[in-house]
Every structure is written in C-alpha cells, then in structure tokens.
Image 1 (spheres, rainbow, N blue to C red):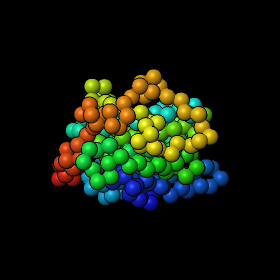
Image 2: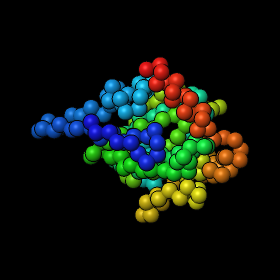
Image 3: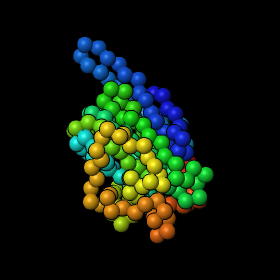
Length: 201
C-alpha cells in the first residue's frame, strides 16, 4: 500500500496493491498498522457507513466538534467520486486550504482525514457507492456543515457536473460565517487531541 500525505496536513491518500487473475481481483483496502505508522496512532473503529449517490450529488462539507470529532477512512467501491478534504481548523497554518482525490472502483484508493477536518465528496457517476470507517459514532448535536460552494474556499468542483445538494447542505454557513458563529474546530484543540491519541498508541 502506498501512502502519501495530502497538502492538507493530517490527511492522507492510500493506494492499495491489486492482485488480479481470471477469477477477479483481490486487494487490502485497509491495514491498521500501515495507517497507524503514517498517522501516529491506530484508528478506533466505532462505525462504518455506506452511501449511494446519483451523479452530481454533493455530500458535505461536514465536520464535528473536537474532541472527539470523527476521523474517517473513505473509499469508493462502485463508480467514482471526487473526495475533498478542507482544513477548517482555526489557527492552522493551512486554514482554508483544501485538497481533492478521485476515488473510484478502478484504482480503489482511499483517503484518511483526521479529527477536525472538513469532508465532502461529489458523485461523478450514478450509483457512486462510498464506504467509510469512522472513529466515533454519529452524534447530531456535535455535527456541523459548511456550504460546499463557498466562494472563499473556491473548491474546483468539476464544471461538467451539475451539483445536487441536500436542503441542509444548501443552507449551511460559509467558512467566514461559521468562524463568526464559533463553530469551527480550534487548531490548538486538534493538536492536543492528536497528541493524546499518539500517547495512547
């Protein structure tokens, strides 16, 4: 498995080796020790999700309060999505930056994003099926969102795909509004949380 850190700190892209023959294909899409070596601690698996989206569907930008927030390990098992990770940690040297990785059923790559980062994806195909592992269970009272089309973030969504947003995501605040409302995770809190996770192993 090849692992590289993205331009957003504390986020990684992981590309597995695939083994194919006349029966089909085999791969390891998650290895706990490989991820732990890159991140500095193990992923506490608390919940696994699956979403199926029609072409153009945008889910996110979603994030959760720190602590404990929710780290995610994401892959696409059918079709393709553009997966986007945003540094929304107030005080981070990379605050407001984003990076994107195409996840599809050909390369079968995955992304890992640490607690406190924003996450979104856009379905590039119909029936795009995304599965992801989460370090914490979903807790509605700790969950927040940002508008994925926020001009300040200027995410380069594909121009040939008409975005489809849920009512909740369409009404989400911009990055600046969320900052004014005190919704964004603090870089100092995230850093302290990461240190505690590494100390715990």
